[in-house]
Image (cartoon, rainbow, N blue to C red; front, side, top):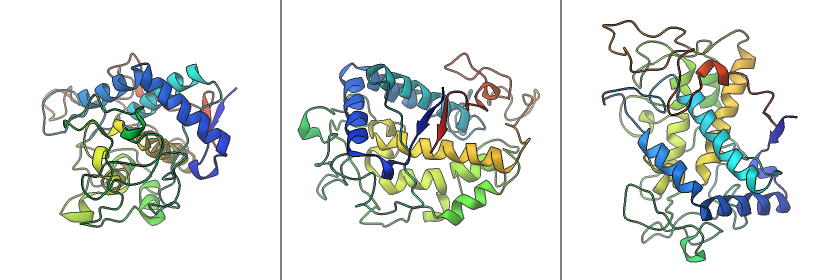
Length: 288
């Protein structure tokens, strides 16, 4: 039977406690840091050489769908009742709303060094030391809303602009594409300031701290954010029946994207899975 991923703002106190307890146990076992390392390793930009699977590429959505499933399986080995909740950032838009409560993720970082001081993932609690990262900081950092240079979370309208696009992705299949659902949702734009960051990308910037860069998995909100992004793929599929992951076939030799992106039926590293095998997950989970 498919399990249910819920809106973080609807979780009961007991559900919050179980989720937090499972997360801390996965961290204690050392499994969590493996997820952080994997994301760092696969945080490859389209300006670099080689295959891209996680970002700036059509497989952004199936890659993170499988990544979420792996984390969720680790959590459910601890407590089979736990699923990854999603953070609806079009609705819960303030630093005092879900999921930034003391009984779930804690709040923003202090002004001096952005260190998170509240909630179960605060360094002072002794249960959430950063061991894999791109800086030397051992504590979780956040800067919700970017106090010194404010940025707004994406709106429902921003999300609708992505959901309305009937085509999954288009050439050149990278961060420069201006059409296609995938990049409208992933959010690589042009220009400076907020125009350069849309939807998924802008949320990472709004949270700030650890959520900016390849080590963003160090903030547990990463999973709630990506569960909501995954929900948008789910909704897009239902809005555009018959629309499929693209490209269906690999780019030809001579193309700038030859052997640099994953086509629909190709294996998607680091797993032995293909994007098309992840298009329908209704037998595994659904969204409330």
